[in-house]
Image 1 (cartoon, helix red, strand yellow):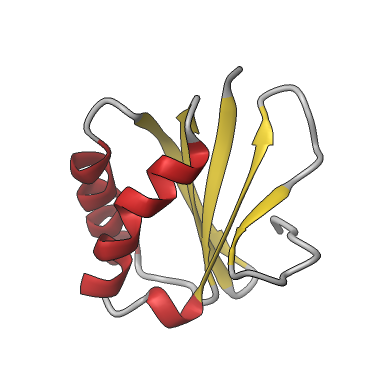
Image 2: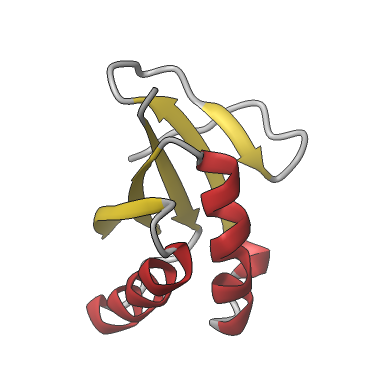
Length: 100
């Protein structure tokens, strides 16, 4: 099954900074996922990753987020490509995930 993992940062990053994070995540993912773009607005920035292994992809991106000092302001969830129902990956206990 194919999923979309959304890494959501609770800040509107500059285009350059968001692209830097995205590029570093792409490098960390190797063949486990493919970056499918990003957006920023309404106080958040999102990176979209297409993958069959959303948990693995988030684990691989976690050190990237820490290196960019974003770990404390990050949420992550995934959904099946043909669904709007999110499964939260991080943080534990988050019961609602919305992409603005």
